[in-house]
Image (cartoon, rainbow, N blue to C red; front, side, top):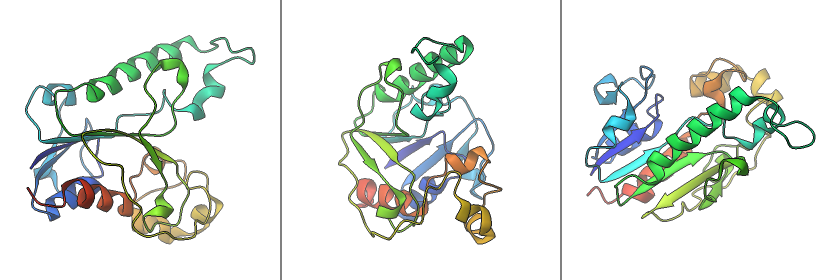
Length: 209
């Protein structure tokens, strides 16, 4: 299959798809860090959505959509206190919808729990890294079209929350393994764990067709 992995500089999912024999390409405005620039399209992904793809797996930026940012957006009475952030959130929601309503039969979009104020539809399922062999808590929501929900592959005991984790802060091997700098690095928060990346590839494209 010809597969676009949008907004993915790490190439975690792209590499797993390539290992299965698919013509998969990562795309991001940044250069890739996954070691395969020959599979990376450093262009505006909205232009790529005009092309035919057999499957699209997207990781659009969540900074202005995530429920974790509610404290920055709202006053105590629920009114908007940061109007610049509100406008950026609306633009991020439109970007998200570009993937949701693109002309492709098989689409998966990944994001954390979203703020309801932006009017985006409810996710199809929520997964955690510890359901796929990586011992961390990082709730990940998936919006799926034409694809089945992911099935857990290897349950392990979670250590604690991935973002802001004291264990991760103390253990440099965590960052060596996942090629990260620190728990405050934005790439830490957006990291697609190896177990989830492998499950996405094998369960959604494992037949190699």
